[in-house]
Image (cartoon, rainbow, N blue to C red):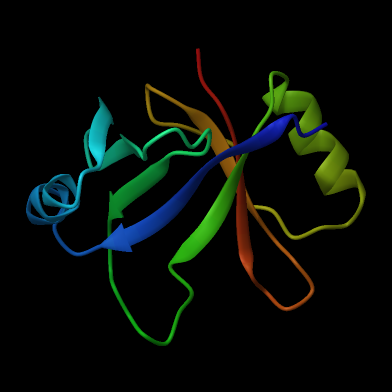
Length: 113
């Protein structure tokens, strides 16, 4: 079902400003999306994604994103287990959905080519 952790995502209030900040720390931009950027970090196999959104100390804005090559089947399997899931979404670059653990922690599954 899951093949790897695809990325760790951090919600930021301004992608452009945050991108400069991360680049000044040595992060390298690997991909530019509409409201997000993906960075490589040294020799790490797990990139960091910054995503523009509402930043609140009351909600968990850091979450793992798992990768699958069969997003529809993975979505159905998780949903069949009675896990709370969002709708399957397509932003033009990625297909993805969120799901939640027993403590309502957000996790995400994605597919991209």
